[in-house]
Length: 249
Length: 213
Image 1 (cartoon, helix red, strand yellow):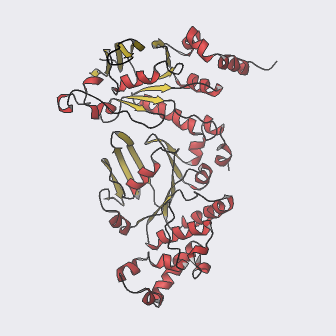
Image 2 (tube, chains in turn purple, cyan):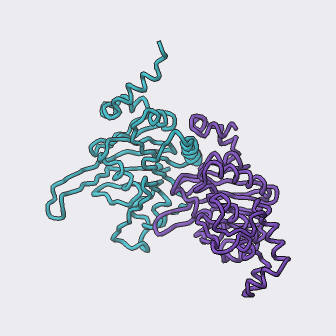
Image 3 (cartoon, helix red, strand yellow):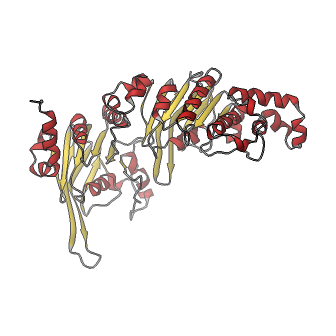
C-alpha cells in the first residue's frame, strides 16, 4: 500500500469545480511529481493533501489513516511536512535559529527565552544535523539575510525537515531560482530521497522529469496523465516538444 | 435507450432590448449524438459556439427547443447539479452564474457524480511543452469511459488541424448561428463554409503533406 493516498478528491469554490475526482498515490522512498499548467488546480490539490483545505468529497490517507478533515498542525505532527511557495524565514536571526524554532524539542519547551535555547547543546546539535542534510551546516551561525536565493530555498527545506517528517511536500521548489541554483537544488533533492519520501509540485518539467520516479499531470482539476518519466515521454506530442531532450536524458 | 446528447429544435434569439424586440443574433441547432464520441467544433468568432456550449450545459436558457443529456432535460435539472451532466471548461476559467426562475428543490437531480458531457472551450495547445499529448490521451480516456467530449478549437496554426484530424471522429461547424453536424474530417473539408473558414491552413497543410519533388 502507498504511504500517502488521495481518493476521489472533489473541491468546489462557489459554483466553480476546482478539483474533480482526483486520486493520487505516493510510494514510500520515492519522489513523486505533480505538474500542470497555471490555473490547473495544483496548488489547491497540494493544500488539500497537506490539510490547509478540506475536500468536499473524497479522503486523504497517510500510512493507512484518514487525515482529511484533521487540523493542519495535527497532520504535521503525524509526519507530513511541507514547504511554502512564499519565503517565510526569520531574516533578523542566524541560519540555525530558523531550524531550532521548528524542532519538536523546541516546541515542547514552548515560551522559554531564546538565551536558554542557545545554551541547550542537544537542540543545537539536532539543528546542525538537519542543516547538514541540506548542506548548510557551515553557514549555521551566519545571518539568515546573508544567504543567496538558492541557499534560502535549502534553508526552507531544512525548516520543513526539522519537524522530522516521514513525507516531505515541496511547493514549486525551483520558483525564482536561476539555472545554477536549480542544478544545486536537484542534487539536494536527490540526496534527500535516500532519507525521505518526497512529493513536489513543479512547473519546471525538465526538473521534474529528471528527478521524479512517478509524475501525475494535473489539468482542469483532474489527473489527465500519470506514469514514470519514460512512460510519459513515450508520446508523439511530447517527443515533438522541447521536453523531448529532458525525457531522453 | 436515449442519446448521449439530444439537441432538438433549439433556438436562442438575442434582441436589441426588453422593448425593442428586433433580433440581433439568432442561433439554431438540431442534432443528436447517440454514442460516446470526440466531437470537434469550430466556426468564426461570434458565430455562436460559446452560446451553444452554454445552452448544452444549461447555464444559458433557450428561446425555444430543448437539450437532453442521456434523457434528462438539462434545463429541468437543479442548477447546482447541471455540471454533473455537462461541464464547460472555460478558456478563462470564468463561470457564468445560473439564472433560474424555479427553486432547486422543485427540480430534478442530475443522477450522476461525474459529468457525462465534457465541453472544452479552446484549450491552450502549445507544441513546446508537450501537454498536448497528455490532453489528447485524456480526451480518449473520457471517451473510452463512455463520455461525450466536445473540443472547440479555433485553428490558426497547421498543427491545430493535425490535432483535430487525429482525435475527432465527427465535427460541428457553426457559422452565423447555423449549426451544421458533419460526419467526419473528410465531411468537414467538403463543407464549403468550413473550407472558406480554414482557408490558407488547408493549402499550407496540403503543401506540407505533399512529398518534396
